[in-house]
Length: 442
Image 1 (cartoon, helix red, strand yellow):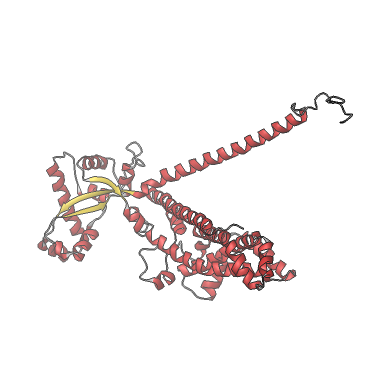
Image 2: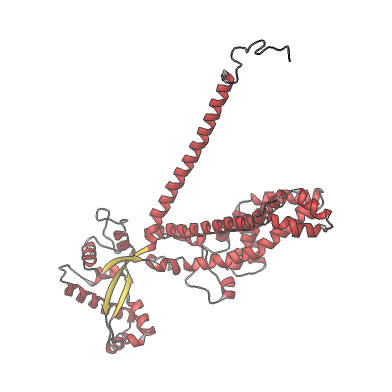
């Protein structure tokens, strides 16, 4: 029983919970606008990401294809002896190839003017390739052999649309009239486009032969550099993080170390290249352009990133885990290595792989230790030579191609960017898998 009557005093106008007042409406409108701003930002970011991806794929896809000329002919032992007796041996082999191509054109019934200069502008000088083949395969002498020879860079550009008849200008590399011969050979199936496996597995070919340029040797150089970075940066970075976060006393000295680590993470990468040039090459006299030196320089650059991410992962473990381990009699070291470190392992692995991915794409430090000036023409002979012999790396090779004048090298640079992005995406996917694999709940 109560003396209070229902709706005593009544509800004041505008104070009903079912009715929004003007202040609540303004707050709701502001929240809706903020959500719209966030959604718009996400859509704009996705749009530019798609534009970037499409631009990279469209510009780099020609690097994975090439235009080749298929010519089948046989050389007798007498012809080879004749060529070896001449002063210009490769020119003699090229003449045999030209005669075979002319016979193939005549047999196909094509009515097109053919001269040796036009064939040389379309294919180049295949004499050395043919001579090396028969020297390595003497059992093929006298039998028909089909040679798949790369066409010149301008013919390749004509096939992928980079060179057109309207923009074509006569030069010593290609004449406008040569395109009639190219079209006729394409109609007869002599010239065709194929997958450019040489770009994936080959090495740089110098400034005069873009069709034979490949990024395979640079991938190997980057692999050896990443091995050095992983072997050095992971144990050093994790050990330093554990000491600073779990064992180091809080004083001015450790505060100074923490400030310097944070500052090193913001230092431009080219500064680490200057440091590597002064210490590892000029002072320690390590070989210039070697993956070992590149790995040491990138290790110095990656360590602050790994230390900061590892400390953040260790700090994210609740203090109750440490207190519970100490409460049941575990030592400080046992609580860290048996309880805290396993729980922080997903974040440590993620930070390490992100640091490695950052190091994989760096170019500025490699400029100063000579990896851009050296052109890798082949694969290393073994593991020791892979670390110590001069080599290149993927970002340095991409920089070298982009700096050359021939437009075909520009396509190679875009193709190298695609290969580099594939490696970076793979490393990030591995980071996600490892994080979920080692993730523990507490």
